[in-house]
Image 1: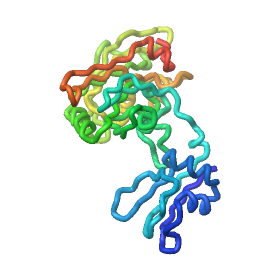
Image 2: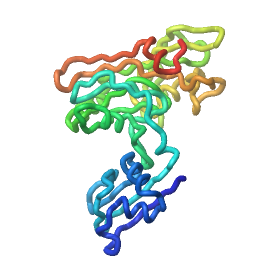
Image 3: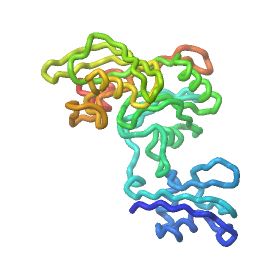
Image 4: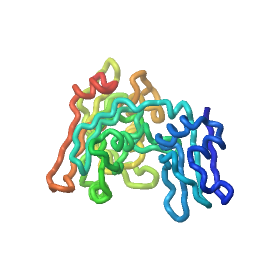
Length: 282
């Protein structure tokens, strides 16, 4: 069952309990509505305040509220699996994000996002802020901030390009030993550096260490496609690069300045870790 509803609350419906109102108007049981609310599928816009997810089932609706329901039974039934907190510094945390897990939720839910997983599993409980992103298909390291101040500090480091980001990827064909790709993406400057680690003639693929100096959407995947060496397993870009293992692109190294100690912090995933937790076969 999948449905989307928008309701404008007026004087005749104000005062009702949110869960009861949604259940009656949608035909979804109260138990399933509560579950959907807890997983971020209900949104509330009240007065001049920003639109937000409504998780409180007993919220009393007010006149002029705008209530939105994005109900996808299949999506809500999915369970987040494979995310691992590798380091908890209280003000920020470092996570391994598996392929298939998104950084942030969408209108339909957020329980499958690394942001919500962090909020629900870390102790003590705290707010999570996403300061950078990984494609849904990409597995690897992601940094989560736990206060607005820390998020602003780390976001500024990303904007100033002082954060080091390295990826391991398998590309089609034998690439040059090293290279730099500066093709603009979406009209914006984009810079990708790579070094070939190995080449396998049997599979006609190269393993690369890739560093990105900018953070454009699908940057590595799009840049490697422009030089005719697309990432293996990429469902969107390239030809002759499809496989059964999925996207062979992994965020393996992240280095930044700790906002509290001002020390350089470096986190790196080993091949052994990747082989245990991903589809990596190298």
